Image 1 (cartoon, one colour):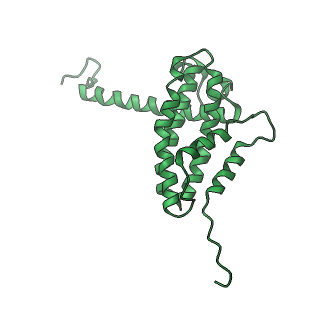
Image 2: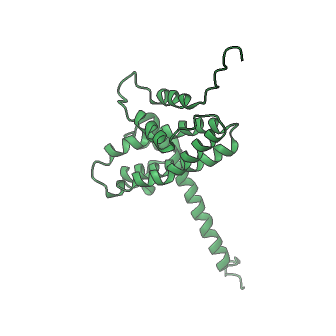
Image 3: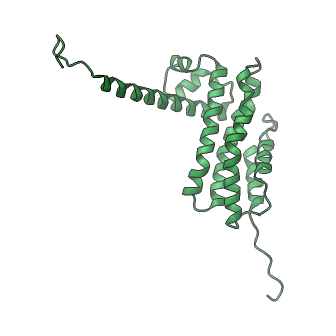
Length: 211
């Protein structure tokens, strides 16, 4: 291939094609970093947290956030989906890496509580009737029901929690505990969920007297 008049060899079609996926992958990673930072801010400060706080946490300028997410509703919905996927991915990973299935369940529930903090702020933020918010609940159930079922069933099969725990009932119970009045200083969703999870633990059978 002839060199250009400046002595540079033009990029081939293969070079251009390989550069495009790299740019897309970089953009995707940057977006995921931004969403993770936004989720952390929403958990601590609520979904009405200033965009500048999210930009600071993500280490980017506010313009970068608006370029990815032109409206707050766009950002909230993206964070919601990001957290659902993070919870869905964490279930199998925790089962594979934790010392016991019960330990995996406890760690996963902590992550799920963080997600619910954002989820319960979603409805108030999308008061405008954004039609995209409608399918999100079904999406949440479709992705997370199999995950919590696998965690609960593994812990039950290992004899670490009671065998009569309904995974879906457990999912809703955690959700209900996280839907209380957050303005009440005595309300601590995480502490209540920890009590719920502790209550699932299998108890050793009492030995008969003289046994």
